[in-house]
Amino acid sequence: MNYLYRGTSHFFEDGIYQNENLKRPRMPKTTPRNIHEAADAWFKERFGISARSQTVFCTPCKEHASNHFESGGSLLEISLVGENNSLIYCLEVNDFLDLIPTDAFTRSCDSNFDIAEKLNGFDYRVAKNIEEIPSGFAGEVMLFCEKYKVKNVG
Image 1 (cartoon, rainbow, N blue to C red):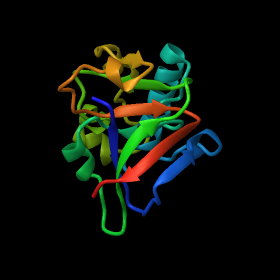
Image 2 (cartoon, helix red, strand yellow; image 1 turned 120 degrees about the vertical axis):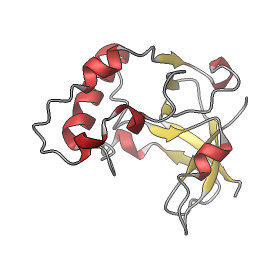
Image 3 (tube, one colour; image 1 turned 90 degrees about the horizontal axis):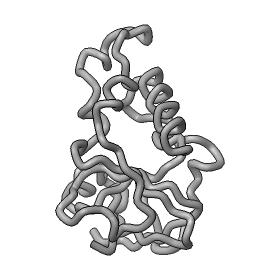
């Protein structure tokens, strides 16, 4: 496994990009804000990274990435740039949204769902390069980096 993939809603030219989430934290599209913030705190406590707001979401599975591709966007092959990269993943989790019960998306922000308690039940890991992720893993990878290289593949 040499590449990660990412489907986007807007077009990217091939090239090297700064991780803009380091300057202005990523805001969730669908995750309720209270769950997003609690998960960010959980990842920060364990790995020193606010993984839900500072990372680039990708996957080693091109098909999985294509599910996130939208018209006018890009299907990207991502290569790591530099040495200071962290890839956070969990073999048991395909997509973070799968961890959130359906009713947490419709209830008020004072929902009693505890994402930290849920995350404690999973073995999230950090790798420094793509080769450390077990072959066959097709789930979400949260890439913490300063820069990354993209190439359109679809």
